[in-house]
Image (cartoon, rainbow, N blue to C red; front, side):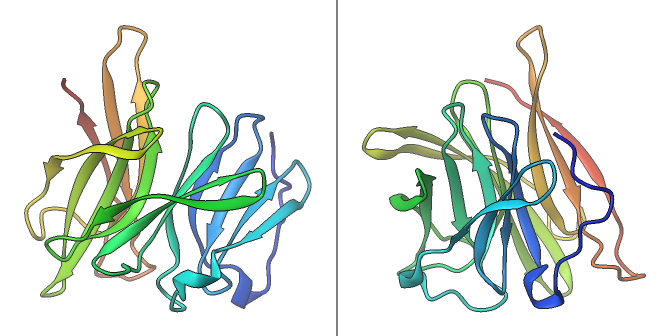
Length: 202
């Protein structure tokens, strides 16, 4: 699909955070402030789904990570923890369902997510300390009963990279895979836009 060249939203509706391509090719974007997920067709937002009200998300702590599985369902993780964990939410048929919880640890919060072809969910997390960023990636194996396993597969040093906020799984024809991560410089002169390609191994 192709979005129109000019597509403007009012300022208090425009804090986009996560993006996922649906099974039909439409684009899904999660927003903070006015916490919601919007589905975009070629010309406009066709469906708006508000974030679950029970999460009581703060203005700058909404649905930060968004990913679509092979079946067309969307999965979202808020940047705000509830009872020491981040709720893993599944959106299908216009309804949200909590399918698990990712324990918070080390001060990290989710900022991006993507699925691989085998159905594993990779979650990029960020921690901010002493005006520096630290990142890590955790891999979730999902099943009918929720999260079956969770492992940390990579973690940077504090200050090694800038504000890594986006992640995409890239899979080659030879079966190899990698993670592409991109930082957000927040339009600040003292930050950088960086791209990091991390090779995956079994």
